[in-house]
Length: 319
Ligand SMILES: [Zn+2]
Image 1 (cartoon, helix red, strand yellow):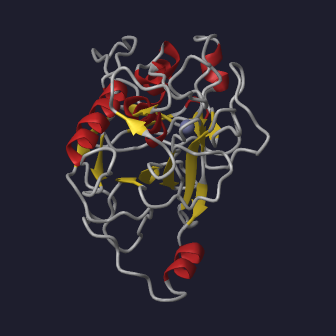
Image 2 (tube, rainbow, N blue to C red):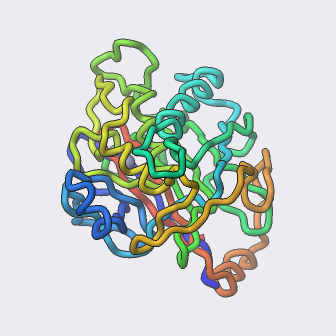
């Protein structure tokens, strides 16, 4: 097996600097039924720096990502942010996820209409690190970066989601989200101040990345890669977003994977892989963990996107 890899998706600034690491494995199979489709999926292969998704074209290299389990747990770092209290963050993040998990899909004959993915708030955690541990418990953490934003990106990232996945199957193993509250004013106010970034919009976009969606070529979509301060449009899903989530997490419980094939989702167990840990894993012994993971494990880690204040980006990482 190959080692897990991770991908990071971010939201870039005022101009669409880069497209996310988004891939749309569904293009061929979905085109006939939904000609207006623009949504894309994050894949196991990084998006080329000059690639931009359009209404007709997604990044199609690699395997599309998905959560196999019917339920996914997430945790918020207990310190939250000077700008957003833990309680406000928890409520806002829950609402953001619900926009996706509550999406109503076209009936498929199974008697179900809702998407077959759900999330659970596992409660506050101490850990504030973006990492997937192969030999220790995990948490899909959402953390606010008040003190510094050390991503070395020139795109003015508002938030970043890092997804770790199995490179062969595209199954997501872990997703961690960072919000750039160091460089940006994030607000829960309504109406949103002209220089503020709407917390609900950022989180709705980022939770889309968390669930495996990439940037859409539809400029109206929540998953569009560009966001302007003072706006709230990304709070609410468009038909393109709903089509995307319904296509991946079908109401019958299956997940669309490669080339129109489906795989069954597992039952609801939000426990992260290798168990739930509120604390970060202890530091790995020098040279041991990464080498072992790279050479003996066949899985890949994917990064999910963050929503920068102005734009979005996706990142992948080799763990
Ligand atoms: Zn994004």
